[in-house]
Amino acid sequence: MIDSGWYRDVTEFASATKWLNGTVVAFTTYGVFVLVLVILAMGWWARRRGVEAMAGVLWVPIAMGVAYLLNSVIKSLVAEPRPCRVVPGVHTVLPCDGPTDYSFPSNHTVIVAAFAAAVLLLNRRWGLFALVFALVMALTRVYVGAHYPHDVLAGFVIGLAVGACGVFTRKPLEHALERVLPQRLRSGSANPPSRSRPGLPSARR
Image 1 (cartoon, rainbow, N blue to C red):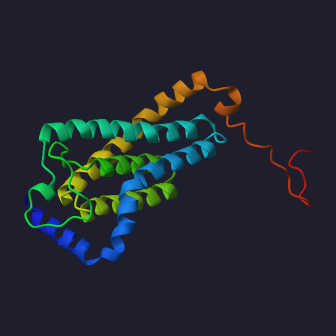
Image 2: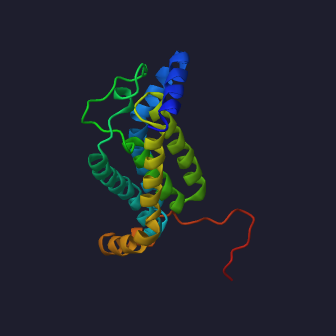
Image 3: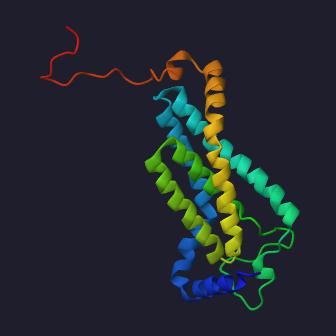
């Protein structure tokens, strides 16, 4: 592979930074599962902001699922062996996966990239944090020896493309939610009534 030299460089860096291995392994292993808690928190936030916000949050896990399924099809078609099985003389942080657990593209990366793109459509500030999270996840997949750089690059592109499709799915999701949600959630009226601050005149005369 054209980037096998980069892969070797990263795995050698990982071998030289054993003090960092545990943190990277924890992040690359459990980081995707943390996103479940983030999605639940966003759902709680969206319930007070009406059907448009809830549709945006709903698209996040849908985008992650679609990206994963699409990526799985591509993996099966390309059937690229893991680099730890092809590049000689490398020592990886994590054990090498089985011969039928293919490398291209990276599942972890495609999922977090889809998450980031979908969140970016919902809230720009949150989306920027999500993009940084996705980039770190992509880097850790090479660091632990699971993927070539081109695996995570392809996963990033696929995930972003799927997540960005939220531009087209938002309205259909809104219409679907309008049919099933109670009125107080559709209008965002779950918000507590606002109270005028002391000392300020009422807007109504």
